[in-house]
Image 1 (cartoon, rainbow, N blue to C red):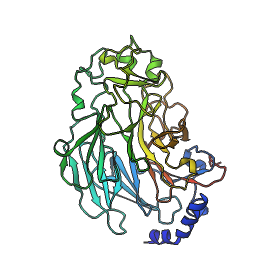
Image 2 (image 1 turned 45 degrees about the vertical axis):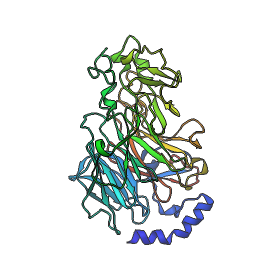
Image 3 (image 1 turned 180 degrees about the vertical axis):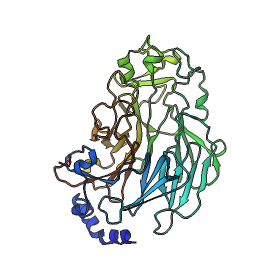
Image 4 (image 1 turned 90 degrees about the horizontal axis):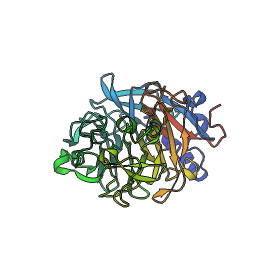
Length: 433
């Protein structure tokens, strides 16, 4: 195939780029989009639009030849996965094909297989040869997750020891006796913690596993972690949690509308086996820098939990930004300060009114060892098309992140199915103007 031959021809350039931090391909080979396809990026970065409207895109993964696989929220052309090939490496996909009956959020390549999840299962396709889409029938890796209507997406990641980690979100906001009902107390104990609201660990290579028989609860007290990634440098799991909603509408005696917009934090966790992060009994107040008792369990907005009762985040973000993907960057195509740092895609809020809606951005978090070495910074903005979109009105919402084999960064949009490829050029043209 031409694209594989092209990769071999460019190998000397890849090696040179590794030494000089220049792009690992000819800069003039990429056709950058006008105004970076709507994105505002730091100086020295440019973007091309790989595809403009592939469907309601969720997570994505990129193989060693640069082929891109995007799982969709709803079928497109009757299929749930879009496969994209950029044969001449110009940043635009010339070939787009659809396959698979599965739709959801999770998709990753691992040990020659393409793994994809549904709301209740994980499957895989064997990838062979140069074909863009697999010819083999899918195999069931895990099934038997609880049926649930909210927070059902089974995002996942792999470690380097043959394990897969699956997010099993809580099927409620705050485990109330009457869900999302003003003043309703929380259930004690919360029954969702038995099989949900945490991360479950399985064998990555065994087929026909079920949660009950083969799953190991790795961590608990996590409301929903669509964003998760295994950090190969530190050999740890990290997740970013969606915090609870409606503090003011459910508990107006304790929280104002302004409190509701800011709280609780979206929490960035380093996850060790056996950790408990506190949901639904606690939330994190990033303004007080404390874990607080949830109002459903006797909290009043002022009462912290007992010190050491639950694990604290390694970083906290303002409320309702909706973290939907996490990527630890490992290549040297981007400048050295980005290596081993974390990119987080924030999908954007719906419930900060009457305050402005926020999120709708990709941020970067620098790391030193296992924890952040500085504050987060905005990396890619401009997705919604306005500074404060109304819920549902954003032109684009960042959803998935992936690192290409050449170190470029891919970003998906869940609104119209746009896919961007972000390249470091070294030039001072971050806005594309």
